[in-house]
Length: 245
Image 1 (cartoon, one colour):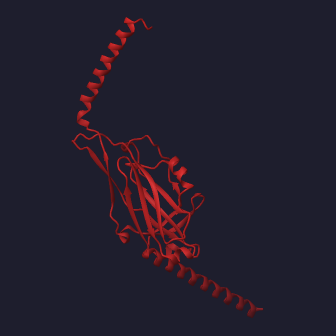
Image 2 (image 1 turned 90 degrees about the vertical axis):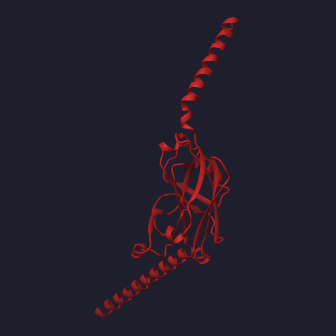
Image 3 (image 1 turned 30 degrees about the vertical axis):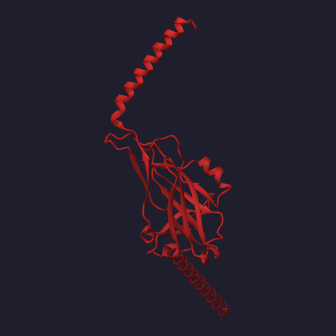
C-alpha cells in the first residue's frame, strides 16, 4: 500500500514539473514573439476629423498557436472617438473596440480627460494587421498669445499578447505585465505581456488643431451685440410700420 502511494506521489510530482516546464516554455515563446513584433501609427486627413491607422506586425507562429492580440490606445483629452460611429463601422471592420469610459462628444478639451480603448482583432489570418479608427479633435480654449493652432500628441498603442498556455506571467519580473479585459465583452480580466514603448522606439504622433484668438473676444462680442441691436430695432420698426402683429 505504501509503495502504491509513493508511486502515485512520484507520478503527480512529474506531471506537475512537466506542466510547469511547459508553462515556462510557452511564456518564453510569448516573450520572443512580443520582441519580434512591431507597431506603427499614421494619421491621415486634415482638420478636426482624422483617421488613425495602426499597423501591427506579429509573428505568424504566435497567431497560428492561438495567441490573443490586444491593442491598448491611451488617447489624450484633445481628441475623442464617436461610439455610435464605431458601432456602425464594426460590422465592416477587422476589429472590435471596447471603451474604458463613457465619452461626451460635446465637451471642450479643457473640461474632459483622456480615455483608453481596447482593440481586439476579429481576424488573425495575416501576420500584418491594419486597423483604422476615425478620431475627432475637440474644441480648445482660445489663445491669448496670438497662436492660431494647438498641437495634440499621442503615442502608438501598446501591443499586448497572451496565451492560455502561459498562466504565470508575473514570474517574469523584467517584462511588463498589464491587466486588461480578456475579450471585448469585458466580462473578466486577464494578464497580458506588454511590448514597452522603449522597445518599440516609435515616435510620438502630433496633429494640429485650430484655436480661436482670445484677444479678439471683446471686439467680437461688441460687434455681435451691435449688429444684434441694429437688426432688432430695424425689425421692430418694420413690424410696427406694416402692423404685422
